[in-house]
Image (tube, rainbow, N blue to C red; front, side, top):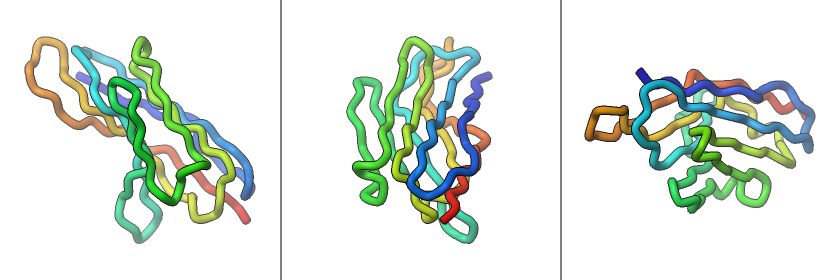
Length: 121
């Protein structure tokens, strides 16, 4: 089995910062892209940022210049540093990773359970 466990969410005032972490654990063969998505109440889940195994990054326009995604391949962990937070960033944030389980050939998507980020004005 493979699990993604997120941490680091919370309540912060507008303009503040938070750092999210997501660690993949279990029977992991290899990890390709990792990323963060978010879903606000009544809205669809949307991409926040992704990072490839080689370190190439992609960001939603709404977070460019404020959020930074990074990863530690040795720890199978992805991070999201969020600065300059705005009330519209309030959402449940979900970690995603494309993982091949040890002993298997195919990659598949795995999701974390979500961590809540609330930004007060």
